Image 1 (tube, rainbow, N blue to C red):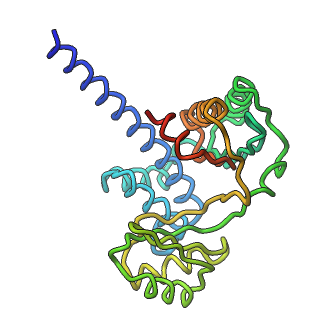
Image 2: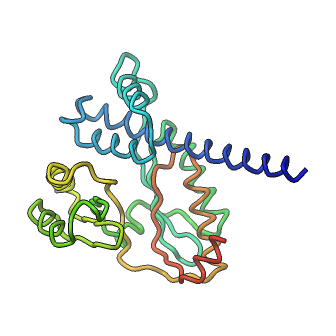
Image 3: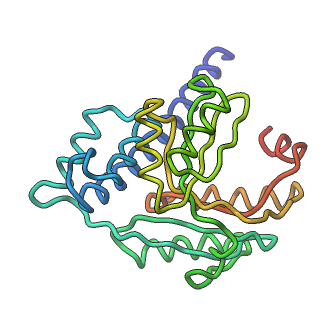
Length: 249
């Protein structure tokens, strides 16, 4: 019985991992679709498409799946039309939350997002009601092995970046949104393809949460991220190390 139970547990975990992978793929395919339609289907001439393909590599999407998505998006019929929408509001404990989505049904997505906020004691606000608490920026990440801290800093400044934060495992380059693609391309020419390259919302300040409030906020973020329409979720909170460990146990 123990062996049977262990096998079931393994299969359950594999099923959950497969479902998560499928959801990641679906979200990336939506971004590829929108990116391919926003310009030429050639990544070399379409910076957003290049970024989408980079995101596909991050989740280990097969190359032929990426190519099929581009072909479908730019072919006759073109598949579904997705609109870019952003929702802003306050979650539990006054945490500011930004939700980015790609949807083919605004009413459905708005209803799902509003229901998630309401379920966990939050409320949706108007556009720009919380985004002023965040900075919009480009973030490009390289493994620490590609260059020394000084080499990466010099290359990033030369490319037009604003800052580099280096840790034991990675170099994180940040820049203005307007210069994101130019900085990414310059660094890619020098150091090769980055681990990740994306536009991000970074909070100006964070709210430190205890275990109970942290658990509730994480539940809200989980249910939002589980939506097929939601691409990214950002929130301005932090957890003490002991709380983070307790919640991840």
